Image 1 (cartoon, rainbow, N blue to C red):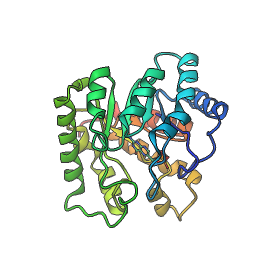
Image 2 (cartoon, helix red, strand yellow; image 1 turned 45 degrees about the vertical axis):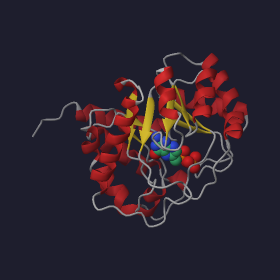
Image 3 (tube, rainbow, N blue to C red; image 1 turned 180 degrees about the vertical axis):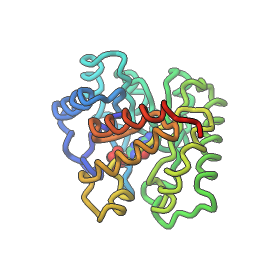
Amino acid sequence: MGILNITPDSFSDGGRYLEREAAVARALRMLEEGADILDIGGESTRPGSAPVPPEEQERRILDVIRQLRDGIPATIPLSIDTTWARVARAALAAGADWINDTSAGLDDPDMLPLAAELQAPIVLMHRRGTPQTMQTAPEYADVVGEVRDHLAARAEAALAAGVRECDILLDPGIGFGKDQEHNLTLLAGLGRLVDLGFPVLLGTSRKRFLGALCGDVAADERVAATCATTALGVMQGVEIFRVHDVAANRQAADVAWAIACRSTGE
Ligand code: HH2
């Protein structure tokens, strides 16, 4: 899943794709590099970021979605990264296919019913707190167990709202209300989330916890570090990787997959 942030302030690529032509060109490039899905967002969710009103999110994303939907194969899903049901509804009307909700339906009570009504696949991500508060000393007794229980409960809520089982995807929400130790423990325990039986999506791309392990390099120098997490994710059964650097992560995923398929079962 290639990331297209149409924002002035995303942590690693803010301001680069605000113009429609630049955004579309970036999307086409990610498809050439091997992306199977594109995730389009008009709001940064980095720690400390301010919420972007739905009208502004729509202004940023809708024309790009329309142009992409007309120009790329129908087999490539376009995902809309928002926690607002009205933004998701407008994006789906413009040609998007999936909803990526980093609040798992908790920010907006209309989100799960919308996914049910439109039979849209929806990513339910674990987040503790909000982007404004989430990095203030998050605490867990058992981070993998608590994230797993929360995601299981959100999947139940989605099913109760009428979302089809085949439309639910889960995401541990790396960096969303987790410290360094929590992120690493979650990455070591992805198999326990996969065991819930829904496809799992992982978003580690260029995130700060990787920089902290690699001499505090800048965000765009965390590509190899991201690829390491992609390969380990494949080995644990993760199916979708939300990344900025598609070509490198595609290679990492393809190699890891070729090895995972030959697992000896020992
Ligand atoms: N991470 C970000 C945004 N959306 N969605 C899912 N499902 N999973 C994630 O891990 C995830 C996400 C944050 O990354 P990015 O889009 O690169 O930055 P920003 O929020 O600053 O735009």
